[in-house]
Length: 93
Image (cartoon, rainbow, N blue to C red; front, side):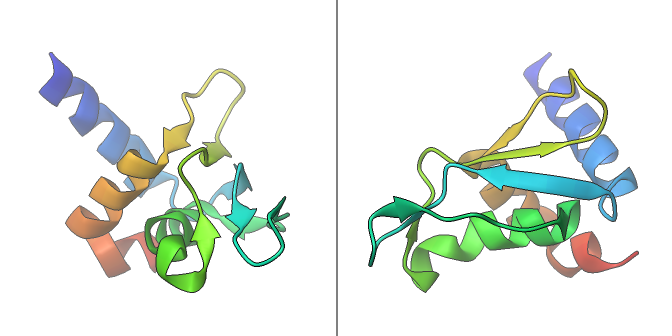
C-alpha cells in the first residue's frame, strides 16, 4: 500500500511539476530566521529543498505546498527521494 501511495505522489508531482508551489519552514543558518521563498514551480521547489542544506539552510521542518487545497504537502524526505529519482525531469515543462 505504501508503494502505491508513493507511486501516486510521484505521478502527481511529475504531472504538476510546472505548477506553482510555496515553500515554508526553511531557516537561513546565517541569520537564524525563516527565509521567504517567492513563487516557484513545483519542480524547482523540490530541487531547492532537496539541495538546500549544502546552501546553508535548515530544511528539517520544510514543507512544499502545491496543487488544490487538500493536496498533501511534501516534506524534506519526499523532496530528496523525488529529486534523487527524477532529477532534471522535474525541471522540464
